[in-house]
Amino acid sequence: MLPVGVQNRDSPRSWCFLYHPSMLFVLSMFVRMLARLLASGRSETRTQELEIVVLRHQLRVLRRKTRRPKLRALDRMLLSVSSRALPRERWASFMVTPATLLRWHRELVRKKWTYGRAAGPGRPPIDPEIRELIVRLARENPRWGAVRIQGELRKLGISVGATTIRMLLRRTGLGPAPRRTGPSWSEFLRAQAAGIVATDFFTVETIWLRTLYVLVFIELGTRRIFLSSSTDRPGSAWVTQQARNLSMDLEDRSWSVRFLIRDRDSKFSSSFDEVFRSEGTRVIVTPIRAPNANAYAERVIGTLRSECLDRMLIFGPPHLDRVLRDYAAHYNLRRPHRSLGLAVPVPAAPGPGHVPTDPRHVGRTDVLGGLIHEYEALAA
Image (cartoon, rainbow, N blue to C red):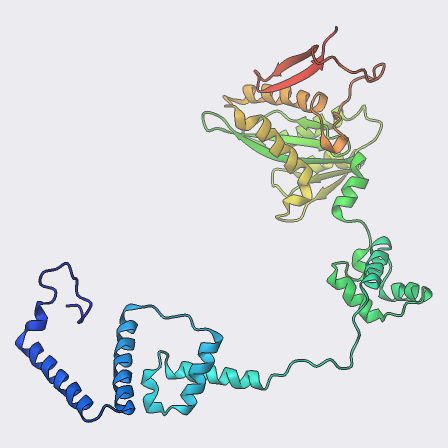
């Protein structure tokens, strides 16, 4: 049964319990008590006491039906201060527990004795222009430490402590000088790109749910790719043979491969590495769970999937080998690359020069059944 005053008004029997004899007796006694209380004297004190009784009852009703309200800082301060003035036997009128009131009061006391930091002696803040100059010197001279930068500033008539310079470099992410020496991994790859080849495996699921493995090689300097034939059993002999095939393809290069980057896949055998070491190539194994260390191979695999493999069904190894052969020819001979200034990895023989093409004489060649389109100028 719902409490008094909150019954369902749509129910015809919602208010019938009020007319029960016992309820009528209780109500009549309550009305007589209020009448005598008011008749004894309509003073302001009597009115306030009755108002307090009504407010307390309404508070109990609200507690039954509403969620806990969100109190602001002013509400907490008022309740905690009132709890110190009101006797503990009267704390039942508060809408929070006594432990909460005491905790709020302790917070007020703690804030009272917590003073703000007054402006006193200490290191003055560095001028923003001097801060920018320190960062500039650190970036332009990676081998300079804090003391070295301090000496350069002193020559310019600027006095800054070495500890201050060191703290500023750490906040800006430059760190101490020994950690800023030498190129980063990306800078190393760009500087040595002409002699670096990256490799990685990727898998292709056929229409019959057969997993095929392919090994891809990419020259970082030219962005030229080499794709192996597919297999469902990439053993040591197969992987070693792919290394030999790549070595034969690179024999006509005017430069030699200095580094080969690969991950820690167990399919790369020792004989695979030995093929490259015999050619004077150093094999660099990436750290554990660090795909960004082999980002070039990962990126070309993603491009190959998005532009080709994810848009067609593969029936078997012969079909996959034919598709990869056609795509590799398009990738190396006809596809522009942003990293090469929109040039192709293997440019054609130089012609008489750039001649504007008439837009009406542009032909299209379909690759992989029209999945990829290539455009070239037609003879007028």
